[in-house]
Amino acid sequence: MIQETRHFHNAPLVYGWGSIAHLSQIKGQRAAIITDDVAMQEFGYLDQITSHLKAADIESRVLAQIANEPTTNDIDGAKSALIDFNPDWIVALGGGSVLDSAKALWVFCEYPRISWEEVFQFNNLPEMHKIRLAAIPSTSGTGSETSRVSVIIDSETDLKRLIFSEQIIPTLAILDPTLAQSMPPELAAASAFDALSHAIEASIAVIASEFNASIANGSIRLIFKYLPASYKEKNQHAREQLHYAATLAGMSINNSTAGLAHAMDQVGPRFGIPHGVVCAVLLPYTLAFSLEAATERLSEFGQSLGLRGENDKELAISFVRELVKLIQLVGLPHSFKDLGILEKDFTAQLEPLTEAAQNSGSARLSPRIPSIEETRGLFMQAYNGELPEVLQA
Image (cartoon, helix red, strand yellow):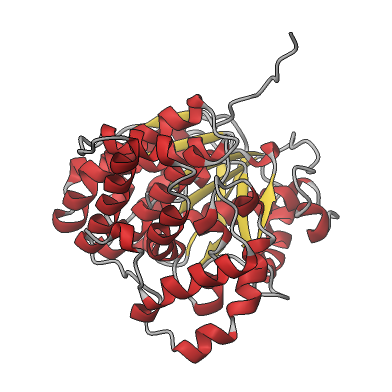
């Protein structure tokens, strides 16, 4: 019998306290550093990176500083300096926006004449063979350090678009929990919900396998266990475990897909809301919508957390209710209205938001695919904070 052959992709990992020192062991001549605009310099991590590269006898230069979610214009403005420097390593130091920018710049460094439309074509990049990418996350959410996805905002449409290819999986991911200690509580909470949405949605997608679902379950367990202490106390051990949980979630989604919350996340660039916050708002509504179709997997999460239920459906409901409690515990909003978005402004964007969600591959691979009317309804529930009755304990 002929069976489908699948692959499990993720970046090689180096992890542990002080693991950024591994850069002193890599081989090369020139490293282009991509980082954020302020934080990595202020906390001294940028100096550590350059010191470790110097110990490896590698010339390094900061060639791009990414302040916000990257746009095509941002990448266009930065790529010439990298191409001129001709690096054999790109070192990305920062949050998900930095890592995603570094992946895009990696492509243009290897192929300066490639167009954005070619770059955005699904799984269509040529082989990356000249430059290597070391991804060092400073936040614990996106999982970009191990994934084949880069999220870039199209400057012409203000919509998020994906570079999706195995070619942009980083050559090396360095998980140093020291960097995660500097996150303010609000960022730690939002980042964790970015990771949590990856883990949950990757597991309930119709293409999910036991490999990515098992890894995701471990990530979910860590996030529920350690997020409260990470948020309230900035507990070092909790921050470490969440840093690893985010990468586990990234590994899971890298080998599956996102779901409805990600399909609907164009709300973020439209209204300037961080991605993790958008995920926290949307997840209760999208999971309640998918409850019947995803009962078995959601009940497994509930069981893993030690929740009670007489059957799989009750366990699944208990899990989503526990998710709502966690949102409240870490001070994240339950609605877009809570974020100060006026109803007239939200409804003015409702049709393009609905259209973008309907066209998303993440929606088409979700366990339950919403109609246009159902998608509008989910957006308005999330705007008004109208939790479905099943989640009202």
